[in-house]
Image (cartoon, rainbow, N blue to C red; front, top):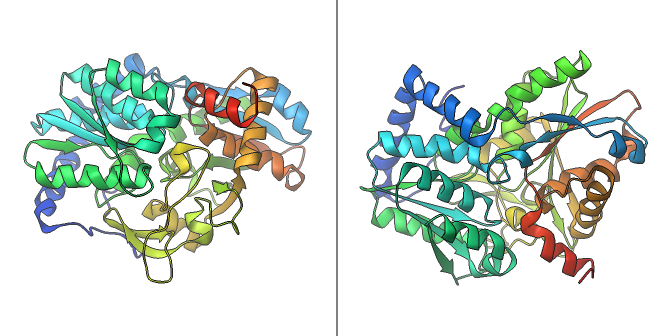
Length: 392
């Protein structure tokens, strides 16, 4: 996999001139280190003994029976240390920060999982860490805020705009521009200016590599379809990348339908967005007739983002990946269903992928083989879901 700057017309670097040298430095460092056996050995050791890889590919027998459709496997990224796939990326980027002699790291977070993962990796390496987080997300992800603080990170509330992930990323970029010489910016998704989308995709590709080997060992054949939720899109790209060249396998990304695509309150950047620039790259973004970025909405803080990674935009245009959406209500129903059938409480983000499968079960044949990326666990969402479901 190359450290590409663009995916077709998408991607690029739409950033202040002062940041270009830092991006060049990052691209050069990663280009050198990804081919360094010592660096890769360190990363592999951390993924095995700190993150807890490989994660299981779990046959969801009771969910399969309840849906009455295809055989369903769950890629259990919820079992990673810190409870989501985000740690795959942050341990790699913190290794980079150390090799680049950066004395401070910053990150943005929505659902809090990337913030927790960054704070965790920063604590592991003994590097000061600041996390930008929208006030709205701080209110609905209180558990992860406490976790970040316990890990020694400074959590910086963002009160501007919609007070969610978009605004947190805005403030993180402002910090980086000001402190670019000593600060490493840990971007959490396959978004942002090049080379970040390619770096994050590659660090998350361990998900797909494992899944490809595991499904063939378990079933002796390739899957029919892969399904993953898409906000910025790192968990989906991490799963999809090992299967992109296998044209017979369907790939489906599930965006946040919020309160419905016609409500104006959703996060379906591909389905309802247009080409535009957000946070340093060209991709599909939610924007008004004047090109102003619109507020996104999702019950899941990690999908509450008005853009999507540039590679997802390209894969949509090429027709290689199908993108669809499910509503908040459908995601909540799936959240409950997986909890009750498999004893697994998923993150609300991951529940979107389960909801898509349940909603479209009639599309599948009984002998189809499905892998759903269970990108995170639902501890962080329990109280929010309980309020929405009137369990409290």
